[in-house]
View 1: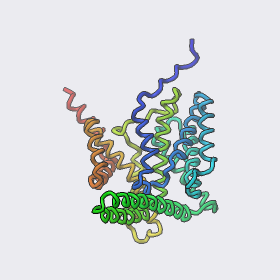
View 2: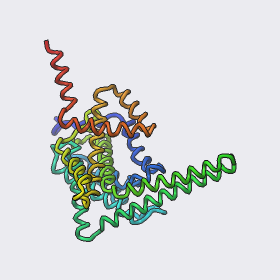
View 3: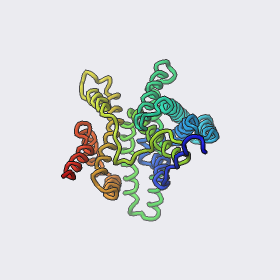
View 4: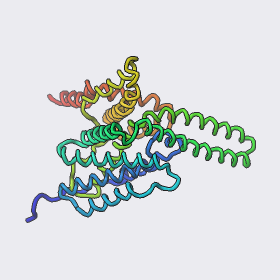
Length: 346
């Protein structure tokens, strides 16, 4: 007779997680997006987070070899020198943030075993942010210096992208002389646009780092439950079921107040970061509600079209934020379920 319950089966289905992994590793390196995303070397976020999941799984009765292997890989990612042609201060900040988030996530998972994933990861990000602020208060690093590091990194990425475009313009000039002026003008306009975007994105690096950490932890969580038969929590729910505590609306309200009240101008940067982070969460919640009401194919198709045709995103994202925010008071999915259940009763 076996000792204890049988191990849970591994999570099934790899194609979605492989696509998500490829997107997480490759999309930040796309020339346009690299001016917005603070960490393009996303392995420094993913591997420590997966190591933390494996260590938590070890405490839950999982394989110590799996925990040891991924912990060694995480240590290698965090200790080995930066890759060639990589800005050392940027890479140090990225690795430091990855280590802090992974440590906080592991501790939260050990302490809050009954909490769902979204509560754990938000608690871990909050703890990592507080620890980072504590290090800043004790002079280990300065927040303004960190912003300057990412601003310089954005400028370097823009310069590389523009240089590539100008090289392409030279090739066009040789092959199609009539299009040479158009190609040069496109490169110049791209440089101006990307510079403007980077200057706006640099002060928002705390929220961007938090969003990248959330994505890394979610991906690590899903990967762990496919690599191991030990459960450290419930599997990730599909987007159509995505929700979180309604109390977080006050963080969004605080961000709005910090931005619009003139007397709080000193906190405007904090407010904008709160709006970016929690606005993104409410946008995901809104897209989840939309996906709940329509078929999966319709949801995937419409979101893909909105992303591909960028101007549509300027409409759909605010709409999704509003829908997600209204769910705080209306709880659309529960309301519709109750209505449907009432209609089925005789």
